[in-house]
Length: 308
Image: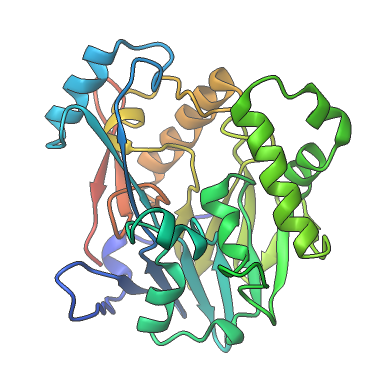
């Protein structure tokens, strides 16, 4: 991976609304600005099937150790905006405005908080999608089903597109979850008339932003290395979900991973790199604002929040 300067060299620019709950968080990476935008949080009741290869008691204990309710998994959603000079790039779009009503305001806040951060949705030039799960693609549409970013080019991983838009793969879907994902993706991208630009892993999809293949969570799951003036941050998408579970216990297999064994392999590879090279990481499901450094531990890894 690219060289990176120590985290301390990243200049500090922080902003938030007057609300007691932070809605956005802006920091400088070299010549770029990155704004983490809070989309909300879903508190998922813990069940025995949440982690495939750990008991509910083990998962409950890990939540308690991290200071959470031992019977509830808190899943945060944090898209980001990258300001490349006058160009604005959104990476992932959250659960969607329509989810505001369904969730009673708990999630679907991305557009509201984007405006609070002083960013006009009409000014977004590019929207980059890491993978085709609802909490990443639903925000492509407004609550009434129109384009949420009317002037933006939409970029998607070619491997992800090839899977979800393949009719044979859709017919082979055997679980309700997979069937629902296929239906949701067809609904969204058909509404967008499938006007999508595909990219491959290792492509520079925007100046200083390189797509990194991190499969397992989904067939074409993609992360991004953003580099500017010798500083780097790794946008890990869903390499882990809740770090208190899947970073601290990297061998745990999440029920929502397409290929759980590959997801574990990817997680170890990426976190070995992040911990050894001391590269900042931005986690979509990390506690807001999701900026951290990865430390290696005896059992796995630890995501240490960084205030920059």
